Structures are given as C-alpha cells and as structure tokens.
Length: 462
Figure 1 (cartoon, rainbow, N blue to C red):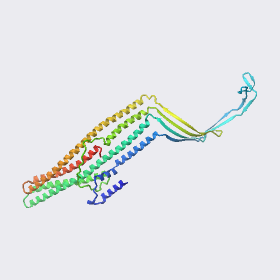
Figure 2: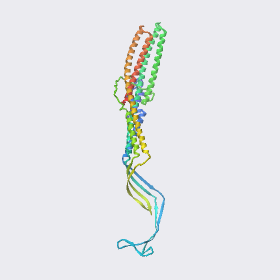
Figure 3: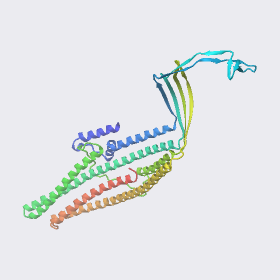
Figure 4: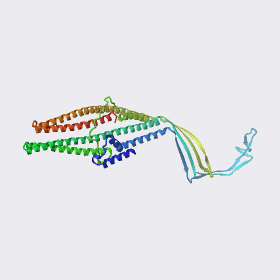
C-alpha cells in the first residue's frame, strides 16, 4: 500500500510540477517504481505463491486422510419367497441325553414316526427401498516406494526455483531500469555538449561576419563557419530527439505514461565503485537454479522408480448400515468397524519400469551437462563484465584528459586565430575536436555506469 501511494505521489509530482520545479528523480526512485509497476515482477510473485501452495498440497500426503461416504438406495424393486410347509418328524430324548427319532416302526426303508409336527407355508417379502449406509474412512499410506517423499521434494524444489526466478527477474528489471536511466542522463549531457558547441560556432560566425563587413575576412570563410553551424544545429536536434526518446523509454520502464515529464540529476555523479576481481558466479540466481534443476531431475527419477515398487497402506472404516427389509423388518440396522491392509507388489511389466527409470536417469545426466556448460558461460560473462568495467574506467580517465587537452587546444587556437597566427580551418578543427572530446567523455561515463550494473548482475550482486 505504501509503495502504491509512493508511485501515485511520484506520478503526480512529475505531471503537476512545471518546468524546472519538477522533482528530480534519482536512480533508486526509478528502480523502486520499476519494481512496483513491472508486470514480470507481478507474474513472478504469483508464480512463487503458486509453487508455495503446491508444496503445501503435496506435504498433506504424509498425513492420514479422513472422508465421509454415504449411499442411499430408492428403488421399487421387491421380491418374495415362499417356503412350503408340511409335516415334520419329531424327536425325543434318548438314554444318553441326545435326541433320537420318535419312531413307531419302519416300513421298508421309510421310517414312520409316532407323531408329526405341522409347519404351515412361510412367505418372505424382500424390499430394497430406503436402504442406506454411512461410513467414516481413515486412510494412511505406509510405504509407497518413496513416491510421496519424492513428490514433496519436487514441489519444494519448484518453490525454490520460483523464488530464484523472482530474483532473476528483479535483477533483469533493475538492469533495464539502469540502462534507461543512464541513457536519459547521457542524452542530457550530450545535449549540453551540443549547445556549447553551437554557442562557440555562433560566436565565431558573428566574428567572421563582422570581419567580412569591414573587409578583413573573405566570404569563403563565412560559408565555412556557416557549414559548421549547420552541423552543430543538426547535432543539437539529434540530441533533443534523443532526450525525448530516452525519456519515453524511461517512463515505459518505470510504469509512467510515455508523455510524462521526468527530471533527472543534471550530470553523472562521480562515485568510485571498486569491483572484486575475485568475484564468482555462485551468488547468481541462475547458478542456484541450475543446481536445483539437477536436483529436480534426480527426484523425478526417484518418483519414476517408485511406480514400480511395492505399495502398502492401511484404512479404518466405521460405518452404519440400514436396509434390506424382509416382511417390513430391516435386516441391517447397526454399526460396524473394519480395518484394511492393502499391499500391491508389481511383478512383471515387460521392461517398462526399467526403461522408464533409465530414461529419467538420462534426463538427470543431461541436466548435469547443461549445468556445467551454463556455468562456464556465466564465468565467461563475469570475466567479460569485469574487463568492460576495467576498460570503461580507463576510457573515462583518458577521455577526461582528452577533453582537458581539447579545451586547452581550443583556447590556444582561439587566441592564435584572433592574433592571425592560425588559420580559420585550424580553429574550426580545434572546435570539432573539442566537441568530439566532450561527447566521448559523456559516452565513456555512461558506459562506465552501465558496465558497473552489468558487472553486478553477472556477479549476482544486483
């Protein structure tokens, strides 16, 4: 909320404060606004949140799962069964206490009893209507071949990669912001150089025109200076267009409307930022992401192997059953408890498991080779960034000296031209050299600033 209010305040300040009264935005302010408004940063945050929730979901597989289950049957299906009655033989106690047939006589193979009991026909009417069951089930896996552990570790690695990717996105946004910022400053500095050059040529043109009026200078000299003035005006126009374009680009990067007026510091701040030549790539998010990728493939191989290992689990079921009526009396109207032990052992899949595991192990080796290759490229990138900083530092010092020499040379040629000891061509050449030296110094300072930012990104310090 504070960042949003801060962004609104900056936007209002840039639009509402006119001319020179505008708020000067520093590099840190531009960086903060870029991080606040960049869409890729927002996407990375959502991706990290998604990975975190996935990890929590997989962690739940370590604990028992409870569920309620119910079934209700509404059916008009019914059936009936009649057990025929008849006369049944009787038995009496024997001398040893056991029951013996109450025989009267035996007629051939058919016994004749002294008495018989009569049982009438019995009818059973069976109905399924209004039968239901309700169950409370608890399930707990005991051994799944490492499937649950591997899946959880994969989800946790995914969360780590998402966080590292957020760091990488942040560094890329900061690099993009620094490039836009320092290019805008460079455009202003080049505009100053172009203005000074035009002012110098204008002064010379006035002097030459004055000399032409009194007959001390030829028309050819006036034309030569006029050509240089035209070149100076073209350079000034290019500088103005560069300011407009770089300002729009900076507004785009930090999330402001493209037509917003943004003011920056007038010049490059001279800040010594020593670099560590013994820097390594181990702090870069890409380096850690590659290591996580190898670990990810290793866990995927374990997950594949778990599909072909024994699975053991237990379940406890407590249920209540009501229904199946016979002669309108329910057979079931009680609770019960059951425990289940489940064991599944894969025996033979025609080599499917072995080949899938080999394929997963091969993917792991491929990721390891990619890691080595990418690490070497990052080492080269870091060394290149260090060299660029070293070269840009030297170039900045040299261009500063060259500018001082060009200024001294311009002053000397001006004095010599005014005293007639130097030609107009020499004086114009000195002006051109001075203008070129000023532009070279501005470009060198901008290159130094950008090389420092690229070095920080290559060393994982951005």
